[in-house]
Every structure is written in C-alpha cells, then in structure tokens.
Image (cartoon, rainbow, N blue to C red; front, side, top):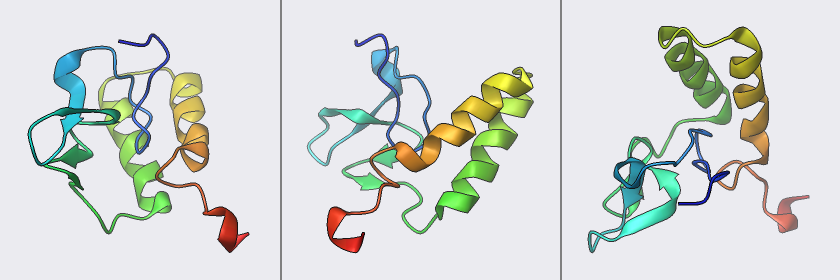
Length: 90
C-alpha cells in the first residue's frame, strides 16, 4: 500500500487492504475507502462536500484526534478527486 494514499472522498488513510472500497466484481478500489465506496458505487451518492466536511469532523472528534489534524483533513477535502470540479465547469 502507498504510504500517502488516502480516500479520494473522505481523506481517510488507506493504509490497510481491508480499508479499501470494492468494485462490483469484488476487486479492491485503491482510490476510495470501504466506508465511502462499495460494490462499485458511493455508499452515500448524494452527500455534498459541506456534509462530508461535517461527517469527517464528527468522526475524527469521536476518535479524540487533535484539532489541527481534523482541520487539515477537512481542509484537504475540496482537492480530492470526488470533490474537484471538472475542468469544463471552470
């Protein structure tokens, strides 16, 4: 596993194979975590970036993570593959 690989939806580190999402055929997906992506589709396809920011913050707070770490994770979300605007929309 790549050391700096993270979920391109929620920014969770993908440092263990069991954290990888899955495709329809059961193969592992190296871009998304199991919480965001299963069976070839997003688990919450209608979530907005604003809602994802809240969810990530809440989950990390439950894990008693430092606020600076939470802030970095939340701030990184807009640059992730799922949330980047297509070039045609710019």
